[in-house]
Length: 168
Image (cartoon, rainbow, N blue to C red):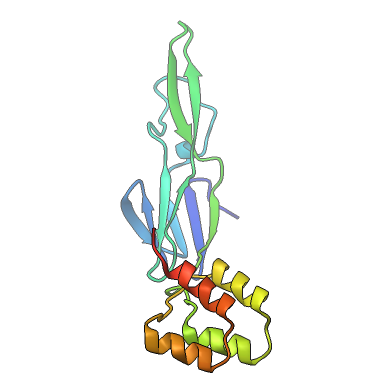
């Protein structure tokens, strides 16, 4: 049975560092004792123990995207004289984070890729569309352009390569 005063944080993959409002509290899988008051929205008096600020968890793991997640929500306690006092509660005790891997440097389209696409039979229009939709690192110095022509690359494809390589 789950304890009513603990926060449980897991991640895929495990081993991620967990911060509570920028303070490191452990590594996943993590069970962190907070206090039942943090999860209890029913405060009876202004003097009830409560969270005075929102709670954000930051989940970090080298090679993966950092996640910042607000896990609390604001509530208001109204006293008998009408005074309103905001406080925060954590509505859930279990958090499971799926971490996204930081992709390696994106693959760029090169002269060799264009030659390969042409040799396997892709048409001009498809290669030009691929050039327009891709990050590129073309070599368009005179010797490289001559080599492209010798490989049979059509002028329209070479022009698309030139347009993509020009930076405004």
